[in-house]
Amino acid sequence: MDQIDIKILRLLQRDAHMTAEAIGKAVGLSPSPCLRRIRMLEKAGVLRGYVALVDQKRVGLPVSVFVSVKLERQREDQLDAFGEAVSKWPEVVEAYLMTGQQDFLLRVVVSDLDAYERFLRSKLTRVEGVSSIESSFALSQLKHTGMLPL
Picture 1 (cartoon, rainbow, N blue to C red):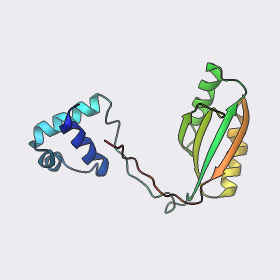
Picture 2 (cartoon, rainbow, N blue to C red; picture 1 turned 60 degrees about the vertical axis):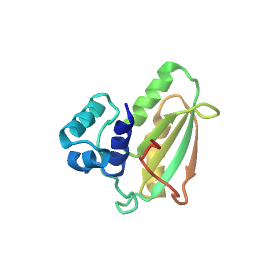
Picture 3 (cartoon, rainbow, N blue to C red; picture 1 turned 90 degrees about the horizontal axis):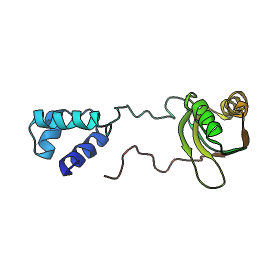
Picture 4 (cartoon, rainbow, N blue to C red; picture 1 turned 60 degrees about the horizontal axis):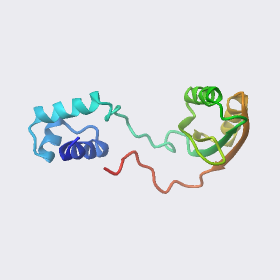
């Protein structure tokens, strides 16, 4: 990747609807070479996809819960099994394997406290090997971005 690719990525992070013509103009390329670079970034897996950013409050999902999970053992099969289970749950919008006291950190998005309790009882507590669960409710969101600091 060179500086032109970085500029293209910055522009697409701000607005994925930009045309190759508009991006090319901004980075000093004609549309065809610009589009070729975008396709190469996609093929290389640098650009993994394009999404619409949805306001979670406006769609009835105002509650974000950060959930720390500790497993009984940090064996590869248990780590994989937990990761596989979590990846199937739509309420989990982010999941990380962690170092330190807890094994996983999840961001769970739900409509209200009752919905979180249902998620906890019907999904999270039923995963074999879970030793402890700690939930922290976000009071407000100060910053949220999908943009990387390129």
